[in-house]
Length: 263
Image (cartoon, rainbow, N blue to C red):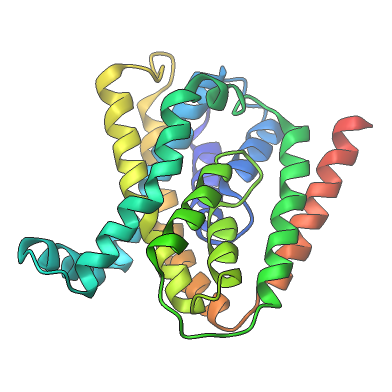
């Protein structure tokens, strides 16, 4: 992989991690277009590096909220911040379960399964359309909401289903305030990404032996910077109910991908 390709993939990851168009799906499409011939494990390794970069950008954007959560935990008080942190933990359970028991099956999906990406993008488009038609509310995230949104996040492991699109749409359809839904969506994935990276680095499950360090480093910084921009932009878009445009985009890309694959 060249440095230019790494930059392109990093920017795609940084933008699409927060914008509801499926970062994993776009990475698979981009790697196919750029002629990436990595085996599934190596391809997943680069994907994880880019996801870690966007997780870091999330920490930067929401640093104040995260500090408040830690303060609540340290003070051992059942306040709003502490409850929010436990809701984050609850939302992680479905994804952790899928990740532990279906890890090999998940890895196999990141090896150029372009037709799957096309169909999953159509599902993402449908979710975004439904969410944009939902009524505005001021409801907070409940523990039951956290579980349901967590299930959406687990399903979004599939390349082509937008994680942010699925979780934000689910939260909005449950009646949660749009801004709060976006913040919860972005924060709930950070512990999972960090945990996944630590696990893979310590266990050696991800093969990086044949991958140059330079493209990963360049891709990391490209994804981080793009993520900072996209995260703030997405919060504003969700608040203004502008998801329909992304639904149309996902539908067009999904249909085009399917036609290209079967033609």
